[in-house]
Amino acid sequence: MNIAELYKIYKQYPEVSTDTRNAPENSIFFALKGASFNGNEYAEKAIDNGCSYAVVDEEKYATRPNMLLVDDALATLQELARYHRKHMKTPVIGITGTNGKTTTKELITAVLSQEYNVLATEGNLNNHIGVPLTLLKLKKEHEIAVVEMGANHVGEIKFLSEIAQPNYGLITNIGRAHIEGFGSFENVMKAKGELYEYIRNSQDGKIFIDFDNSLLREMAEGIPSIYYGFEDELLVSGKVLSTSPYLEFAWKFADVENHNVVKTKLIGDYNLPNALAAIAVGKYLGVKASLICKAIEEYEPTNNRSQLKKTSKNMVIVDAYNANPTSMHAALENFEHMDVSHKVLILGDMKELGADSEMEHQKIADYIVSHNFDKVLLVGDNFSKIQADVLRFKDTNGLKDYLIANPLENSYILLKGSRGIQLENCIDLL
Image 1 (cartoon, rainbow, N blue to C red):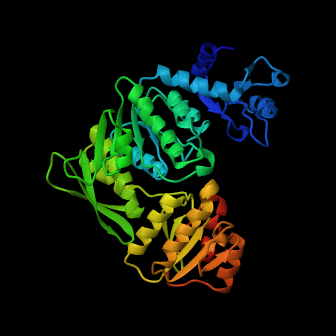
Image 2: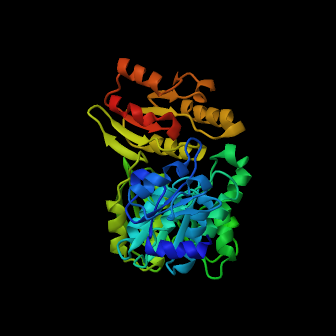
Image 3: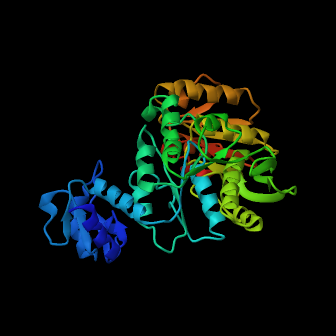
């Protein structure tokens, strides 16, 4: 079956599913494969549950007329999304970066939703499956789409850009993450820069860029750019007013003198560029300043991303969704500067750093011991190898045993680590 024929079916049944547990009636089920499952085995169940069609890529499972046999179900899903995007005139904003891309995506969505009907990536479904699924939700009533794109190897952002075909691009920053997959920091730059290259090669694309990031400015040379940052003459400029504990900042447009003050529910001055990016996108696309402020003030982070949780005993900054050297240093510096008493660090390993792992974990340890934190608890195999006189635990279970025997009280606690360490499992003990 060619993609044009499949697209005709999709236009009749525009709901797409890859999971029989969430397969609406009159939808199309795509039988994807993973390391421990074969979606082809669930195709009949999908039809029985009410799906109108199932796309399979193994002939023995194509047992009914409405089971469509293709060479590769995933590749077909991706091609269908690309084909659909090509037929839609909706402007698309593509977002990538090492840190802050999900928060920035959500802030931009919040701002644009004040004036537009927006389609946005749900959660962090930003990979070779999530991006196509997002685009296949694009309807005529959507006025703009905000698509997050993640990567852990060179070529992935290029591939996702060819599916999403963004009119606008935004790279939040470039840091040391997923080195194990990329091979080097230079490859991280190359991979993230693939979004810029797509925009560069398009006829009328533009990028939003943090003017204070010299690396991004250099990479963006020659691309029509819209700047935000600290300098007054930029489209949008801003400055931190307070971070105790929430980020409060002032911002203004280049063509006005007065600043707007925004009191956010975000933790960390490192979130200012994310907020300014959302303001710049909103300004460029015509959202009123008052509505921009409203959107950012009302936004609340979720999913263990820089959330402040008040427990019966402590105040806990939960940043346990992800961690890499760049985001870890930013979180530590912000925590150090917060005007609060009795600061406790609970840090988990930073994953996927490859050969740089030992060095990067030691750098974090050196920073910690050279600054004034009241208590430090480190968790994970990588932190167990560092040279520092601090408490260390092989895993979260060991940490939990310690916290039961030595409860923390009346403290401000920074809880940060890679998702695989599962530090969030100890929140109930804090």
